Image (cartoon, each protein chain N blue to C red):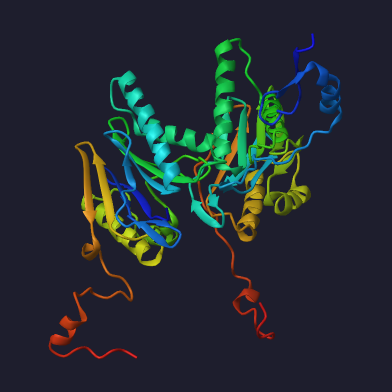
Length: 271
Length: 223
């Protein structure tokens, strides 16, 4: 028994994805077990850090009388450059859900591949059931949170809206796994600029026309005040009847305040 | 590999264009490099970013596409080629610095341009620009791009654009190479030094000062 070697598995390979196992001779065993189990896990260097490259800005969404309405612009920024101007950041998922994404576009494209596969396998059961927004949200939440625990997040903030069996649903999940539902939601700058407007003016029984006007009010504020937004928007709606993603369009902006004409009047050098 | 790379669609196919300067720091390591690389008979890529990373990605994708073509029994589509580039770029995003433009022609969709920037996003576009020199071309293309150009118009646009970028970007220079891909096949062209247009504050080249002095009245120097 003297020359037997014993292997001790540990959790030391948790970032590698497989357990790291140490080999000890019999006489060292007691000390080794003590060291391996009692020493705290030292993380000396974590190599998986993530930087976003091509990013989308805010998504805003709210429930209205017939369902859920969601809007975003069609910009893909590359740092401070507005590099891509026709990026669709709102997509359908199955029959009952729409998803809007801000953050890294490549990660959103990968998420869409996961979701399309999920919906396909669900359809293949051909059992009369279909995944609704709650199920899709839960699935995404698991993916996002597990990636976050491995320090390798999908760099996105997602908004999910849908209608199933007459029930309206609106939820959000982001790269750190935080998730919640509400009557109106936004990502990024939208949280600071759009949500206050929605908190003040949103009602349960908005018609489609009223909802569009409210959303456009928010989109305009984001256009004025968010540097990474562009004047090209997409509005999507989902009701019990189905999904519509409208083609991109632009809004008229207002610059006619008298103060804008000559802001330095009476205070030369002011801005 | 500071660069200017361009890909445009026209009414018969695509034209890919690039400069030819490869720099290591301030030194021009290669003044006549070829940044437009073949993946298949009908699909080429413009490479920008790390020369090593883009070369190895191109090699892998060329290898995969070769096998795919054999299995498929017909030429690979541009979309498949672009997606293979995207997969390598996306799955190794922590380690790679590669911004590429994939362009080609296939019988299903005709001429197509796919942009695969850092991070591994894939976007199909009617035209695309990339590399350090592209910063100077966003405004130019916003103004000069038109849908459905002829081959001659598109070629002139690419040469003009590359040449403008090379005039202002220190990391771009040398010659302009273009590759046209359409139903008929692939044509490579080369536009060197004197054939390129001159821009603001650039002078007509001469052989020597002596030629200037020996000609009629030398022009007075401006103060």
